[in-house]
Length: 82
Image (cartoon, rainbow, N blue to C red):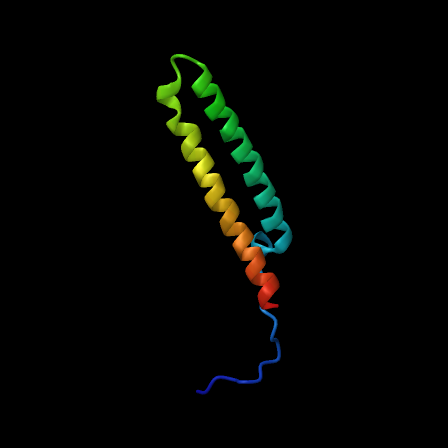
């Protein structure tokens, strides 16, 4: 059976959790999480007993930046490809 080269429905349906609005809100939330992680790094450096625990806010900051850039790349890819 051959594929139909002229389908009736050409637009791809994007699920709600992958829509532009949800991606933008998630990117903004990742900025807030990153700022929270920066505050945690600042506090860990100020407290004398806490520098050993700086790894947790560093991981949180790194993961939030990765998610932020992934979401921004997804949004830009959609805008440039459409």
